[in-house]
Amino acid sequence: MNFVKTFCLSLTFLMFGVAAQAATMPIYSATGVGFFDDPIAEFLDEDSDMIDVSASGDLDSGLGDLLVSNLDDGTVLLESGSVLDLVLNETAGTVQVVFGDLGGADAALFDGLAFALFTFEPDPLDPDVFAVSVDITVAPVPLPASAVLLLVGLGGFAGLRRLQRH
Image 1 (cartoon, rainbow, N blue to C red):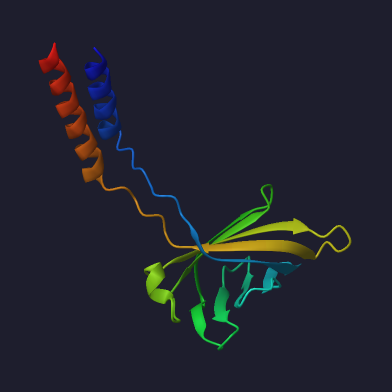
Image 2 (cartoon, rainbow, N blue to C red):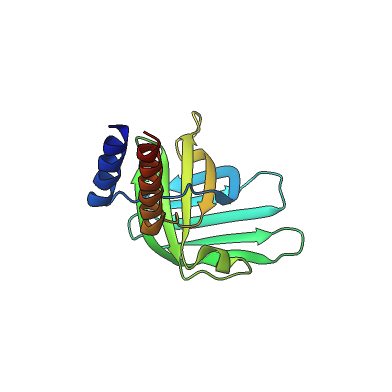
């Protein structure tokens, strides 16, 4: 009976097209300060690592730029002047920006798109200044449908094996 339940559950996942996705991992992370003068926003990296991240943009028009560089030798690791999508969530204190037309030494890692998630908290003394952290990640990679089919097949073999024992 457990085999039938497992098989039906597997078929349900296939029928509804549930696409599993791998977890995203930040390629670059930074903390710093953000300035906001509606609709212009700017982020300046203030942490003490050797990677510098800066970004600025116009929240109304969606225009903006991103620059990630190595402070050791001045190498531009990632740059973009093209914002493809921008989602501001004031309640959660986040801005998600998708940058395209990437350049720089690490641009190939991103396969054309860089996802930047800015998390901000207002400074209680100055409403135009924010403590900001940013994570720049690659696009999540979907789990191929063949992996789900492989799991269904393995489940079927396990069920047949169990039936043969009884």
